[in-house]
Image 1: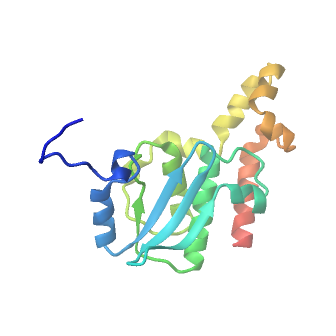
Image 2: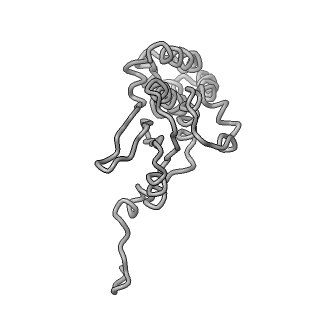
Image 3: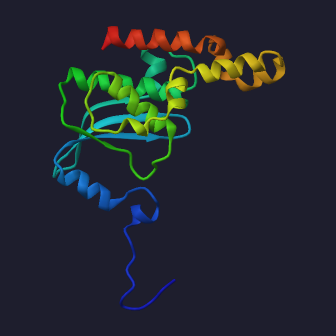
Length: 195
């Protein structure tokens, strides 16, 4: 470790790779509401946040675990269709609350397709967020509804042992990986009715 009077330790959250303070300062100074998207291995969290002196205030939010509890989604909550639906749900809630002037805050991670899927869902709900359409690759559009999972399940259906192992949690919940696209459409329609 370096020593001497010129050595400065950076902030703890920067050292841990959690916060880019330079970018966060620019976002907060802009005085706009931030669309915060965070992904873990199992879940996706989408929030619309307003920065105040007392602390951040959450104006609208959705969590991918809400898909199963409220909108009959039996598939994995950490995949791209779930991320899209989570963003779509938060977008519907933000639109209902009439929240405007939003900018995207994705944190330090920039190359994550689930973040892009959640952002696409938020935009498809009818919200306006400044962005470049080049950020969404063509392959993303094909994967948003889970058609890639459905084709993979069709391939694995020929090998029953691998099929049961790979999709065991979905099969336990009485779901069918071969119907993920139709389940996606049902969940999306269900959200539009309930929110």
